[in-house]
Length: 114
Image (tube, rainbow, N blue to C red; front, side):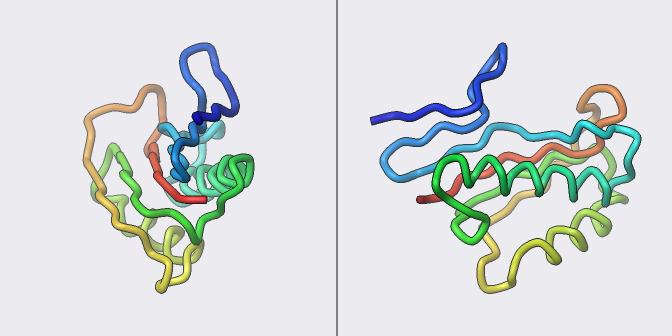
């Protein structure tokens, strides 16, 4: 059975299937924030989205992070390491991209289990 949560005009933010939880690309609303601020806001959203599906950050299996400036990666990494315990770090890829629209610096996609 597939469960879908938090419908937007173009997608569901969270989809559950066979015990897996897929969270679509998540950005922050406060685009005037710096990399650390945008990352914190996104991670707070992920906490909410995962809870909606009966999961949490300790159950994240994989993350793909898109950032517009690889020079800002250390700021993102610092917030990421504060949010997660090292023993629950998922697999992760950080990808440099040319543009995420507006002043968005970062977008995160995660897959977790229930």
